[in-house]
Length: 92
Image (tube, rainbow, N blue to C red; front, side, top):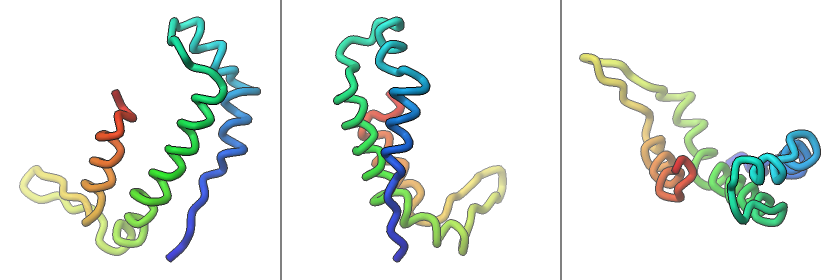
């Protein structure tokens, strides 16, 4: 299986040096958003991508989605990957 390592160095550079996300969070009244917390979040996101989403690539390419009777069905593994993502509160 292919191994994926998220380009965390690139992401953290963009977040901190280009977008100044800590300062932005302060302006938006988000408390506790410091550089260490954001770096930790990016590491966790990279792990979710590697363990939950990467395995869906091959099956997604091979099987894909289907649309039948007004209902879309994703390939096996997509629901589980989505559940891992949402249960972790990533879209809260």
